[in-house]
Image 1: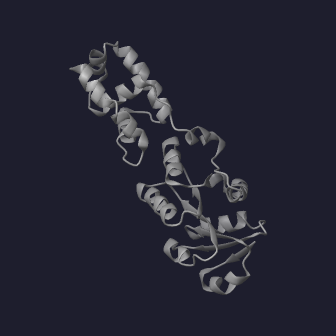
Image 2 (image 1 turned 60 degrees about the vertical axis):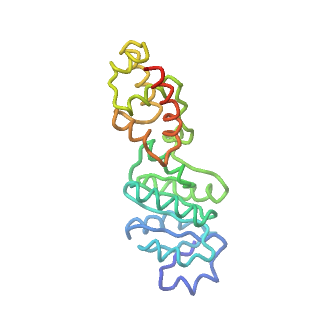
Image 3 (image 1 turned 90 degrees about the horizontal axis):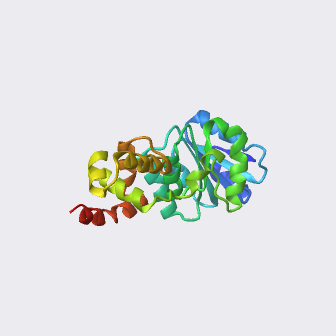
Length: 228
């Protein structure tokens, strides 16, 4: 693998192997990324602290590795923009932490691979290789995030009323269910959504970037009619 810096990148570009990887993040993280990919002889890695500067070298770029401590809404939007503007660009995210909801949103945003920072040395090179081979790669513990949660109609109806601000008791009265049954449905829905509270569930359902919310909102009118 050839590692280049911004100053020498233009001169080395013509000599680069077919697979050119960009690495973005703080210097210590870039050093770890360079070291993790050092055995990949078919790669040239170019790293830098400025993502816009890196992408300005666009010619020949096949894959972008982005390091971030956590995935903010701004970062998610940036991933979506990158995939929209450069559909053929492969993106691997290296993050300190992420929950199932964040992982699902990353996949929805178009990333091709994900590596936890504490697994970087062991997992990054295989992930990069698999992504180049056309695979989407996530940690084993996060594989459930690849599939969208399958909520039952009853769970969707109850979640719709949670968004409307109804209590479990009020939901039970409207749907002719015992409050304990409502709690059971909510517990199941929380588990499928990867959330732990009412507020987290509402955040997922009302997230405009997540099509799940649209599906739940679609049952709300029927719930209102039934309640009347």
